[in-house]
Image 1 (cartoon, rainbow, N blue to C red):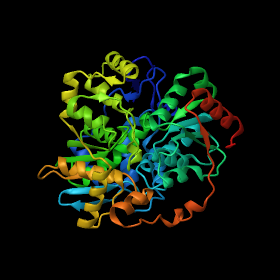
Image 2 (image 1 turned 30 degrees about the vertical axis):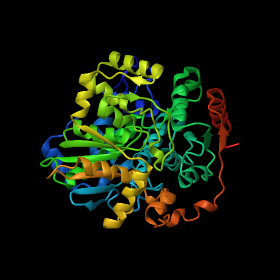
Image 3 (image 1 turned 180 degrees about the vertical axis):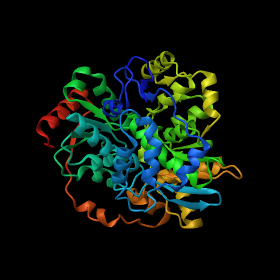
Image 4 (image 1 turned 180 degrees about the horizontal axis):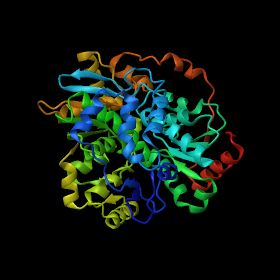
Length: 467
């Protein structure tokens, strides 16, 4: 399997190469040159596999020529060995025909663990083979950072620097990052928004001299391996409801478009997906696009669901590439203009094609709290704000006879203030995190200045510790 950039000016690479590269050198995102497809019989044969075995089977075509299936299976078994639920990602019926796919049973209580735990082992495997050391930089709106830190803490092959928007994550999210003591971890609080943090990461990749100096790599969902590692849980859920002999639909609360893109990717591999319903908070660029082809950037507003406080959804570029029939020149033109003007001019036919599978729903904070309250009152289901928005989107998009599976993206204990305010119930942290608020924090606060941030990352790589 080879990969090409959505913008067409980067050389094709294999899976191990794009794992370490993250962002393409032309500023685009890597995509597989072709979509692997499974036959109905091959899908059916996966129904009896354990989650690690299924994950390896689904990911294997993407890693073909770089990592063999036996090695992948071993890495997947290691990745999911310490999840709190034996099913790894269990399904819970919330309402008639509507099910929560709980993706928060990993070490940091968020869906990011489903991919990041595997990425940790993939990086170790490839870097050990190559005898290399890289510097990972990532931007986080709350969950990616802690998941990456947990996956890579203590590694001799990786220095990790995570940027988060100061004061715009929950206290639990921040502390899961800033209380880690391993010397290869650096946390930076940026005076700005998540979009500012994401822009800084992209700027570091665009700086060729810096990128080469520190051997830069990425674990945000701009890294295709993240997307590939998220496809299996959609496959597993669909198979449990009778796929490939029965269609399913998914609802996904999303800000950066990576999680729902993985569900879409499963459909490209032959899984019968009827609808993909996107849930947004007041930062509603994705739902505005689906409703009226309005992909225009507005000011990021803080909300009860901070992981979706995003106005530039990086992974949308991958879908755009497909909607434009993989015309990399046209995709590059649209994305370049978007960065200049803050408005994406998606051709009308491409927008119509998106609407054939995708729909969107936006909830403000009051509506989100009301949905959380309703879910608990009706069925005693305690949902975090992001999951509640996803459930609302799924309810609206549900069709008779088609199971609606909602990505439950975070444990309610990650957002206790919002949960208590809505339901009166204080969700306890698991025992392993019970002392989280007693641990000391370590992080740097820096302005939204690329030179200052690059200097901090450079010093961290050289000295290997937070200062």
